[in-house]
Length: 359
Image (cartoon, rainbow, N blue to C red; front, side, top):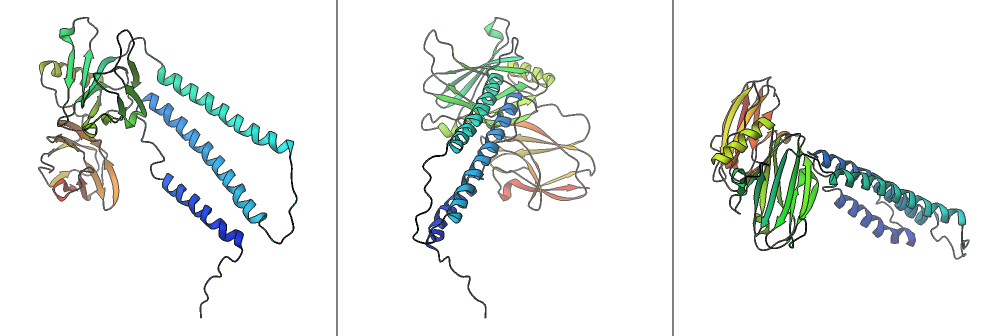
């Protein structure tokens, strides 16, 4: 006959169970989303590295402190009624526990100052300068071309149903001048790992600004990250990063009133997919095996859509979202022969699911 495990008989160990369980629960909850998104600007990489450094140091301190607590609970638990040895001071220990936190704080201070210096650095001649005007509940992106003639500038204004797209070149400093027309907002693109408040600016005061250099082409979702009223959740936008050649074409087309479709990298098959009324227009895509290919996604909804490719539960490719009306072209690595599932990760419904055949 099997025997049940003996319960914890010692009162000290029974009392220790609750703190241990609480610590374990906190650790599990903290594990959800502990690592930030992949950084896609040079400044974001600095922030990401600082975050990892702080996380590692914090984990070491946490493990050390909790380890000593658990060791003390087990080692010095009450065994009888005798009073344990009383320690009224230890200069060596006090110096150690003062010196270690001081060194840690100094290291973090230096690393933080280096990162802040990188974020606050400004290029003498940024590739693009954009005035970002925030208002309840959308954005206006006003491009300054530097020729002194405002008639040649470009402005893009979004609506809650049709968020704006900010086109930017890859590999060049981008300078944003941030202003609010009403309440406090915040400009935030998760993959850029920097949030900057957008505040109403009194006359004579300089507005907040932000500068970054995007390192990878793609479409990045952005949003207001400061609660600003009823439609705060609809105050979204997207950043479409592209090569300088594509950006010049995009800018010229916006001036003429018709943004172009981004160009496709040379070589490879291109298949087209349209999202409208929360549904893909085709359920079957076919591409050749053993070579990269492109998926051109046109979003006609005001909601974000993307394309993800899966084999069973295994994610093979996840495209960046297209927030609102717009077009993006995904460069997909070569896949072996077989049938795969393509799906919108934002609306994983039967209407936004199909089969990708590679043969």
